[in-house]
Every structure is written in structure tokens, then in C-alpha cells.
Amino acid sequence: MDIYDTLLRWAADQGIELHGISPQQIAGRGIGLVATRPLQKSSTLLTVPTSCLRTLNTVPYRIRQPFPKDAPVHGVLAASLALDALAPNPHFTAWNAVVPSRASLLSSLPIAWPSALLPFLPQPALDLLAKQSANFARDWALFQAHPLFPRAGVTPSITRIDYLYHWLLVNTRTFYHDLSWSTSTRLPAGDRMALQPVADLFNHADAGCGVAFDEEQFIISADRDYDEGEELFISYGAHGNDFLLVEYGFVLERNRWDEVELDEVLLPELTKRQKGLLEEKGFLGNYVLDAETECFRTQVAVRLLSMPLVRDWERFVDEEEEGSEEVQRRADRILVGILRTFLDKVWAVKAELEEVTTGEEGQREMLMNRWRQIEGLLEATIRRLEIK
Ligand SMILES: C[S@@+](CC[C@H](N)C(=O)[O-])C[C@H]1O[C@@H](n2cnc3c(N)ncnc32)[C@H](O)[C@@H]1O
Image (cartoon, rainbow, N blue to C red; front, side):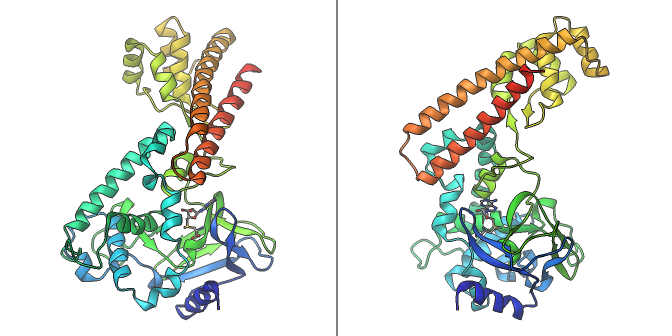
């Protein structure tokens, strides 16, 4: 019997029901869930009883209690998984057998990449990585202070990498789950997390099957009709590819939520006075464009660069008065110039990346792929603005 059959048998014993879907190895995506017969829109694909979830409530008291009351659930769950791994609970053997190996998980996530590769991440990904690293450091410090954390010299020990692996399992496999009906205190939104078997095998797409829960169960249902053999996806959220790369270790080829941040090329074009004006109106920074358009914040900043009179700019910002076609054309020309500067940077990063030998080929390819996507979005926007 292979690991999937074992998982399905165990799942059935737990009351987990799969309707016309089954786990399968998918090239480039690890395991995914695939239709075993034609499926109709809105049909139920999977139900997972609440009793199968691993949440803060299921963490044994001796692990949970010594943590500070406000310790992030992410860190507590990861500690629980790391401690379990020292003396594995046979109840979870079938579930554990299908989670990614330590090598594959650590190789896909930038937080565990060689530091020499990190400067090749786009700026928004670097900013996210800094926050993620700070969160991990906080949780690791809390765990090291825990009375059950193996003291130095004790075997088996738990290393930083052991804990990082379990922390990343939690990071990449939890679902939003509100426990407020069963706990007296309502957890902050970021702490409402649950690990759930089988459902954690759904891969992500920018739109996907429905995910809902009530007190009894999680229910996943088809968002459209599916043919036999098609993979079914859920959406982990409206995330751009920089976010997916840092939090989940992949980028999507087709992603309606993807965007490119322009701050690193737009902010240096602004004088101190212009920055002050933008700040006053709440429009300083966070300039992005996606496949369709540049955001209003970007238009506001570019208009400021293109309009000699501040009062005309204020009319654009406050009253959304477009101004003449000539004004629009001037703004477009300025934005094209800024995007071309960005393109030069992208080409320089790609050229440098081609020479790099550190890290794994898959990691360098992931970075190169991300820069190609950014290049594509910039080029498409330049084309759109130039033919306007
Ligand atoms: C909740 S798990 C999904 C199941 C996972 N494929 C597995 O083998 O266990 C999330 C992880 O799956 C992978 N993944 C999910 N969606 C993906 C996609 N569209 N392309 C590539 N990898 C994906 C990433 O490694 C992500 O961190």
C-alpha cells in the first residue's frame, strides 16, 4: 500500500470524506488533489470534521501552558510539531508521511536560502522576508525558553533548522479557522490557524474551489465543472507573486493579483518638497502596477512630476479633475521613462544572476523567473502607455 492509500484509509477512519478527488504527485507542485471522475460545479469535494484539526486547542497543556498568554499560535503549533517529532505519535503517521520533506521545504523557501541569493529578491519580497525572519526569531526565542525545550547537550535535541522546518510547515499549510465558539478569548486574526489533513494537499491558484467551515467541519466545494484528471485548486488569498515566493516558495505563471512595486524607481525622482506634498495628502510611497493599470497612488505621484503648477495637481488629487490630453500625455511619458529605468535595473539583476553559482539551480531559476515576470509587466505597461 502506498502513502496515499494509507492516508485515505486513515482519513476515512477519522470521518474525512473525499468525493471524486484523490491525492497525486504533480510535476513542480509536490502533491495535489485531482478529479477521479467528472465533477459538477458546487458539488462537495471534501469534508474534514473539526475533530481532525490541529489547533491551539489540541496542543497538549504541558506544551501550551508555559508559553506566554500572547505567544503567537504559529510558534506554539510549530513547537508542538517539533516536540512530537522527537517521539512521533502513531496517530499522525499517515498524515506525516505526505508532508514535504525537510530538504524540499527548506530548499523552496527564501528564509532558508543561502544569504548570497537574498539580494536577488525583488524589494517587496525582501521587505516581507525581513518581517517573516523577525517573526521566526521571536518564536524561536520563546521556544528556547520553554521548559520542554531540550537543554544543551541533551539528545535528541532540536536545532534551529529542525524548528524552522516545523515553523514553515505551519506557515505553508494552515487554514484560517475561528475557534471563538470553543474558547473564551477571541484570538487575533493572525492567530486563527488550523492544520487539517487532506485539505492541506490542495495547491493554490489565483481563483479556486470554495472553502468554508462551521463548528462541525471544513467543506471544500467545486467552483466550476471539472473533467476527470484535472487538478483542483483553492486560493490561499489574493496574493502577488512576491508574497507567494516568500510565504509559500513558488510563483504562479498566471496570477491576476500579481503586481510590481515602483517605489525604488519612483521615489528617487521626487524632490523633498514633492515628497512633502505627497505625504500631506497621504500619497507617499506604495506605488504599484499590475497587468491592467498603474494604481491611483502612482498616477498622483507622476502627475506631480508632470504638472508645473501645484494647484493643478491638487485639483487632480482632490477633485479627480483629469486635465487636458496634453497633461495626460506628459504624465504618461514621465511614467514610461521611470519604467525604462526600472527595466534597466531588471536587466542588470538578470545578467548578474546568470553568473551566480551559489544556492541550488531551482532557487536561481525561481528568482530568474520572478524577474522575467517583472520584466514582462513593465514591458506590457510601456507598450500600453506608448500606444495610448
Ligand atoms: C498547502 S501545501 C499544498 C500541498 C503541497 N503541494 C504538498 O505537496 O504537500 C502548500 C505548498 O504547496 C506548494 N504549492 C501550492 N500551490 C502551488 C502552485 N500553484 N505551484 C507550485 N507549488 C505550489 C508550495 O510548496 C506550497 O508551499
